Length: 129
Image (cartoon, rainbow, N blue to C red; front, side):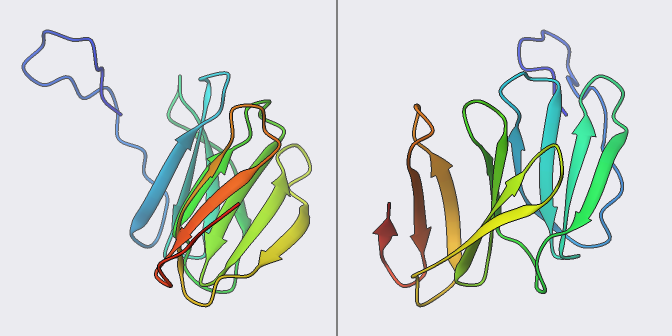
């Protein structure tokens, strides 16, 4: 992690270590105290921003993950793998729903500001809501 508003020559605050594969995406929880990361090791990790320790790890998909995004209220986490998106309950780590519709790998996901919609982009050259 990096200190953005820093005049230091090297503003790095800490390095989070734990994934066993390349990390493809990260997302801050709306409260700013938790960071989600997803990796080629098929897992999502939630990190305590203050300490740099991981809070939990869950096997999210059966292949490597491309992106993660928190809902604006912080209760949901979306993750993408191949052509699917999963919606997770952050507290229970339970998969609530699997969204299908893209024909190729989902590359990015984002919630709308009100949390009522999820946008996704894909190698199939589409954006879906």
